[in-house]
Amino acid sequence: MGKALKHFITVTKHRNAVMKHCFKAGIPFQGLLHDLSKYSFEEFLNGVKYFQGNRSPHEAERETIGYSAAWMHHKGRNKHHFEYWTDYNYKTKQIFPVKMPVKYVKEMFCDRVAASKIYMKDKYHDGAALEYFMRGKARRNVDKDTSDLIESLLVMLSEKGEKETFAYIRELKEYPQK
Image (cartoon, rainbow, N blue to C red; front, side, top):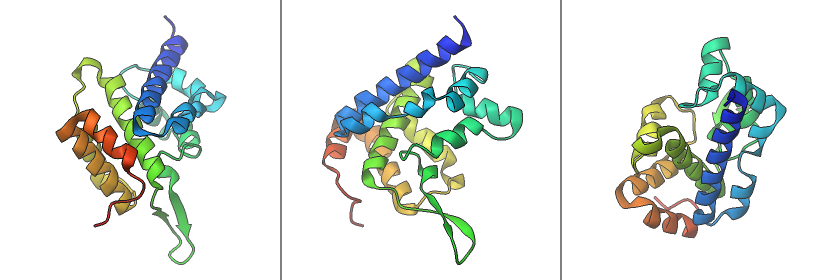
């Protein structure tokens, strides 16, 4: 099987897993639209070129050319990525993170869990997405409330499982009060 077909299958499996999770999370429309940009010319061709099957092609693209053009295209079009939610502060002249709307945090949760399942295959467990999140937490430029919310959802998944976590997410309408 060629790399193009393997990449297509991986992307589609991931998208279908996210869609299934989005339905469980009460955000079906977001699930239907999730990651459609991965099939675009800009993202799909680089995905094929850097496909490995056990991790994101964006990593291999970064290692090869120093950045990922496909990722820059992707994060600019998909609001479930915290990297989308940055802006320029005209006073400090710096980029700063913006608090994500809850509906996109829900989709981000679905995306992270599905990615863990797709890439880890039979090694997946309910704490896997949390472990991945924690490995990169110190380096992530994300709004604190957004980070705290996604982390709390991943902790809940790790401790209480999918059924209880998705039930909670379905009812979640705003950021929990501190």
